[in-house]
Image (cartoon, rainbow, N blue to C red; front, side):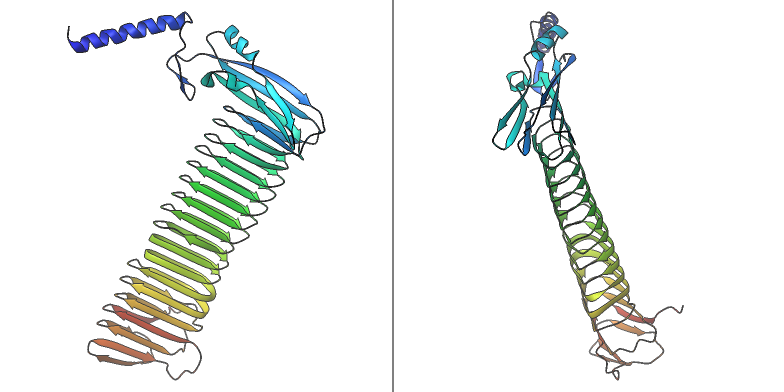
Length: 438
């Protein structure tokens, strides 16, 4: 026989002996790989309940190695601890022997009521413990769990540490702090500060009474109705936010950002597409190799971009300071009272301002400029275009000259108001065209 055939024969013989011993109950083939086994045992379920009467310390701390936690606050001044024991065994009798030795434990240690079980005395993948608790709603909770859902409702405050497990928290009067991974986080109606640290998960946050701090990676974020300041560090994470009542700071990368009805923002990202609609506050944005769209904004805008496409529509404030290159810029119906400063290179800009107040300055290189002149606007204008062409389409003639390949245009210099327009570019066209008649 060939060597390969001998190996196959030995493997078949080994599996046959192993299965025979397993059937006789003489071999446990469960592997400690998150409850997975070659020949999985059936599951059997048992339960046990204990009740505790006051007085209670201010915090209930629950530690559960593997399983689920459901904790609900009530108006009753008692603690009910219901433990569901899920045990994998060859027979129900064998599982029951384990269940009779597995119990919930509750002790008071200083300012904490400690709740746990003695499941660490048993084989890790064969035993799962699920806790269901009813507690007075004035208690704070500190929960440690893994590999299962943690659900909290109607308590004074909460700290949750749940790696490889989902977290749901609702109607918490005080502060909430959550640390998890690989499963979703859903939080709603929190009275005070919310802190979340997560990765490889989705995070949904709604109705938060104070500030929000999120540290996250690799998963989408959704936030709605946040009263306090918002700080988000979430690389490789999509961010969606609506109805922010305070300033937000966002640091992310490689995923889109969408914000609607906000009160100003500072965004630091790269390779992201950003959309901001309905803003009431200052915007400061740093981005590269992506796109930016701002619609309906009230406040100052500062943009530092590289290879960034920019669109701004219906925006007002004191200052607009924009720097980008290699991607096009589209500005329509904008009105900034003090200064509009545009630093551009190797791109084109379509500029259709609602009005001109203060200084409008365009400093560009290799940039094509299409300027839609507001009707009846009379503001001193100077254009310098090195190696390029200036096309004037207004009725009133300007002063136009060409020296050593550089075109110069001046118009409305007799106007003595504070507003003025200065445009400088090179090797591309500058087109000044009247606004379409209404």
